[in-house]
Image (spheres, rainbow, N blue to C red):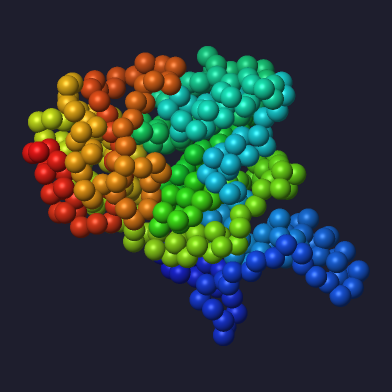
Length: 381
């Protein structure tokens, strides 16, 4: 069955019945016999879809777990209340006191904050490596246990060669955790490229409507058991309403991403033609250094792009003049967003980033001509 069709049928129950799994709000699950209670507790140890207690999810969460696991080509998926919780919980599943973690330097800033502020207090050493490294021997220690990657890189969209890197990590016995929020399981599937765990902030494209907070971690093979143990021990779960909204949003994931891609490429080309702009960062644009690898490993691009403006450009004033682009964090919803960024501020390695003030844009589902008119009007004013 093709992926487009699967999106319509995830969670489908025997007919007659609702098209979407109903919201089931429950903490305690009642039994009429002790035997039934004991049997349920025994079955849930090998089957995460067993309805046993609210902390382990109810009907919509179980359907969503199965859907994302299939979308990512994984063996099991676990849910979290936010994307950052999913990243922090996943990393913690594979490293502990005395271990060493390697993290790509272009990682999502919130992931960096967790690695810098929390992991050292728990006895985990952290080192960063440049995004274009495919052999991490220079950073490897005897106690290295895991590697965190993200492709494209956060804010600046550097494209890692994950198939080449994961050949090295497998030979070194390391677990590779990928932040796959950009690709969201549709455009990019890190597990098929050799990674062991793929984490998605479903707050973004899975939900797609700027009204859900959630995260998901999908693992394969031997990586499943440590993740499952950590999730159950820490009581991580997702509320049924959020699970329902995320699964409902996934029905249109492919259609929304097609429009986000079309609009973003058109806007990127418009930015590139403006004299005020020094560079446009987008992994699918011709001339992007990672475009050949991204074309090889992905099925498309989303609505994100970053723009470097020439020195002296009044960026904040320009953003304030926009009418269809709101100023705000996050992305992946239907709406267009803009925010100033300074990606070099926290990175350990020096990259060939364009000079001048920078902004990240999320290109939403509005008519692209209206978005371009809005940008042109802000430039002209």
